[in-house]
Image (cartoon, rainbow, N blue to C red; front, side, top):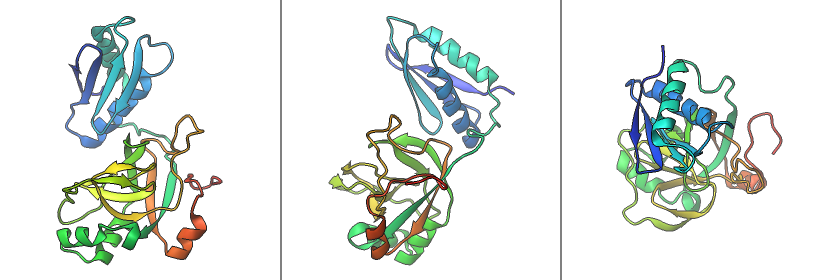
Length: 239
């Protein structure tokens, strides 16, 4: 069975390809596989393909190709995709140590009040899942994750911070993430990892990719100091 997609023009130099099966997991796999296929050498005129949860934005050079030509390629790729096939044959696993609350997670108390849970229950909910990295976001390749199971969504801050430190672990809506590099932000900060996530010397910038899995592990201040500055790496790899 081929993948179901809708192709939409977006201005004069991009198209948006949306998974349209109605199966959230299948549509996520499909758009990411289209993104990878569109950026292999040999497809002329494609600048970038930026996948999210259920859509991929494909940017082109109008002097080298046309929107219609790229749309036809995307349709042909989708026809060959099995939407039930896993995105990665062997997802890598990342364990992210987190120091929760206090100066490292200044919004944990507010998140607890919003959800009607204790701070310990919010932490437990955040620790419980093994998260799938859905896509990479800003800033610096943040791993975008489906959030933990909480009674209500976590609103964004009314007044965003002008500075969120690297390693911040945060929640907003039904999502969770880690901030790889310092930047402004409006998500609720519940903790911080001591590990370095962003590597400017590496072409991929971050060690994970969509389809990899991630889980959080609670640490204390002493462990934070011991781990500070080490690089995030998949299980089994050296930091």
